[in-house]
Image 1 (cartoon, helix red, strand yellow):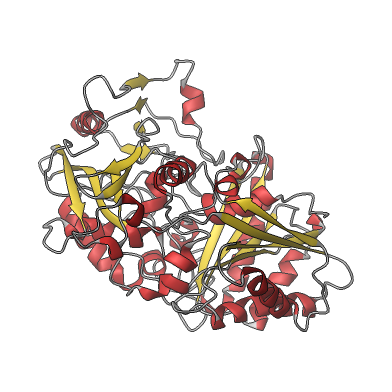
Image 2: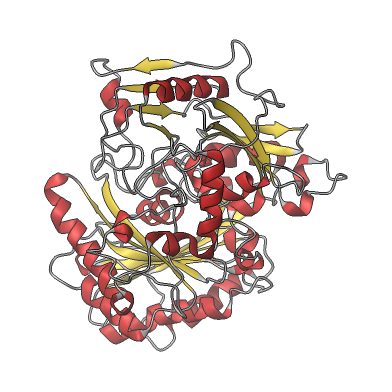
Length: 550
């Protein structure tokens, strides 16, 4: 099967599930003072690597500055490589004592400069905090922030045959991905990742400047429950430094559920994957393009109820710029679902109906589930060189209007785009919609799709062209609402794990609706109250961090 020269299967999956799925910042937040001596702590004497302090002049410094997005490189006075909760406490305390801006990074996959701002003086590298294990005391799975999603999938699958509905990019760190809401190929079937979040451990800073450890859970009588709630979609870098998460599905909250294999969703055994490709040829007219994208949206409008029999089907449509030669559709489904192949066929038939296009260029394969979910080729937005990118996002409650779809088509066939310019339409909804908007900090629950607009390029000489292309596409798609996805009958704001500082820039957001509403809607004031309690000195902040209430 032929594929567009500028965009590979890795790009598609990485952008949808991983790059898209994870803030580089390991979320700050903390709850009531409870020591780190819980079951399975990583800070046992002699067990924790570090701390290692790396400063300019050290041969390791330049390498450790780099995250996944090479648009941003900071210049901190020191990088602290930490391997335990206690080491994080000490590093944060020392930064506060010095009045130094401190930020934490787990996986480093961030759309913006949240851990590479020029003002950051101390960068905490949490990658050694990467344990994934079962905590019998809490009857939950402990995941530390430096663990990659690939590590999480492997450990949960090999040990207990379970999984979480997280992203499809195995190199993304759990730290930022989970706190921002998290979603992936199994979310239509099992909900957002945070729907399975039982608790968090954080290092916070009190009003008097004391750094301490707090644990917050979803238990109704937990006095720190609001801090747990803030980590169910509140975004990274806001409240403290997360040093561990605990995961357990709400359906397993009963005290009689002690079997670890029943505490999280079962992992599929086999994954059925179908890939289709359409060239930008004479058949891909504007009308065919608009109909194809409208059909994708209409199918999701009709098949995204929590009780829909199709929640197991996950699809990503990736319209690429015409210079790529064509674009593709990826469909994934648990091969063990009865009638899986028929479901895929019905979806494809609905997608191409009335387009004049066919489904002949493509193919179907079945893999053992763990293989595609941990394939390292999906780990980055680009390859070793093309690691500069800009992403913008929007939630969709229904298909874009035909006028919006024609706008997308116009930008994809213009003269300024490149083969790595384009967008993704990602299937969502299903069990995500079974949760009330205020039950977690993830407010956008009545949605059926996510849209991601992107450009990827090699070096800074391409910055202006590529940034302009993706910004103008986004602005024009949302022209009727001030250039941004203001919540209405079609749109429902944006996704904080795909942060976009343009939403806070009046040059690109002329809607009068603040960025905080676009990301958090009615949940923002509650997040501000959590911020005021747990980070009253605003120690943890970045360009789109939760603001202290005025």
